[in-house]
Length: 153
Image (cartoon, rainbow, N blue to C red; front, side, top):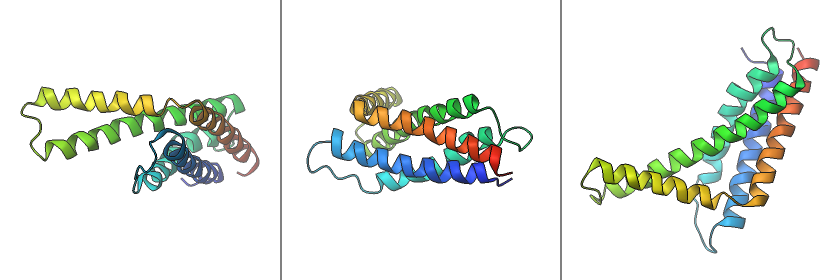
């Protein structure tokens, strides 16, 4: 059921995810790195996570809003979900791209490479500026969505 809290959470979290992708590109990646549709894909994932996770928590079980502490925690949880989802999907894509060129002869080698890519992505995202923006922004989005859930029914 669409609610104002879900809409606000989805749009704000999509914007935050796009900006975090931009920060990752400008602050952590080497000069001249090309990222393609990375920011837009992050924004689409943020739209879904904001709607399904943060917005649902902000709407509350009866549609009258939820406690603000739950909403802030849901915002931070949404950031954790997006980080884990990004690491898993990007590393799986990189491994699949290499496996199509017949680089891996066994499944174990491909699984090992997938985990190596995930760890490399986590090291790349360990930029303090990116982490502060992601977690503080998601907590603020949870708070805003919680207030919208209480006010706009």
